[in-house]
Image (cartoon, rainbow, N blue to C red; front, side, top):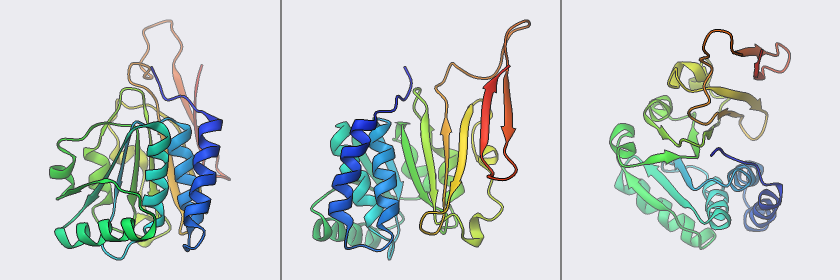
Length: 216
């Protein structure tokens, strides 16, 4: 089993998010992540949020969850953030999510099989969350929003991901304050091959910064 893209579901989630977030600034990010999460049929969607953060992305992810009949979890650093998050979600859209309070390692402890993860690059501990995330066996899509911030300037996906994970593709999109995303392949389809068999080759496009992985 692996993540399989569904254009129809992605389109439905996109349109619904457009309607729900049309009054928000940077709603384009919400529309994109919603379509992506729904299109990949993500059953476990996880995000991070802190006080003062935009709520539109969360609305988009909750809408995607409705289409995939999955689970949407939001990790916040403290109880004040939790209260503000729940209130903002209810007031703005009527959507909801499971909210977990705690440090990255503690919060991620009981969350296994993540299909879709969105973190905020402007928060110092965003890389720690990526390191401790327990991804699903079908593969996963990981996103860093606000990726143009100084905190994320020297960020590299391979530095925070398990070496056994296969990066299918990574790309930086100039959406909002920058969106850095990577698609990790399903477990069991790694690059290690026995003698005489094909192997995985990585190529980085110098102009676009996109990373591609293919067999040789």
